[in-house]
Amino acid sequence: MESGAITLGALSEKDIDKWLTDKEHQFSEAERDFLKEVTGNHPYLLQIAAGILIEAKENKENEPIAITKETFSDKAENLLTNILKSWPQKICKAFIYVAQDRDVSDFNSELKELKKQGFIREFNEGWRVRSSVFAEFVADKTVQELCQNKQSIKN
Image (cartoon, rainbow, N blue to C red; front, top):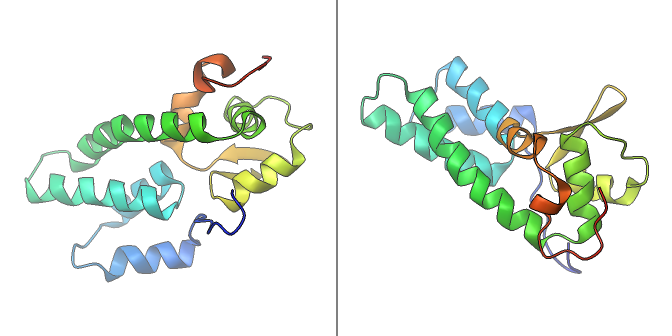
């Protein structure tokens, strides 16, 4: 979000399918769908979740998807907490409002930025958090809990 910074947004369905099928580790259709859903097609999150799933499969776990979701959720929670703390107050608040399905009409530029970064997507006539894990984490928290160290945040 700084001048000259490169934004790493979400991958297209075509790109993500290619990435998931071109790897030496084969993913089933159910595993590919799971990875897309929990990562929101974000390349960095996809890399983390795919790595966890590969490890679970190599360890011959009985339920590799369930283990991956649990492990990825823990890692994603820490990652999202750090991201929220680093964002400007208004972007942080906009993301939380999207996750909580609240009115975001005062956040037009912030929504564009969050979409560009691949954290949210347009859905019907509103917005949704792309990663189901991020959406679950934010859904029941308050703005104050999530946007720590931000001044004058109002719920």
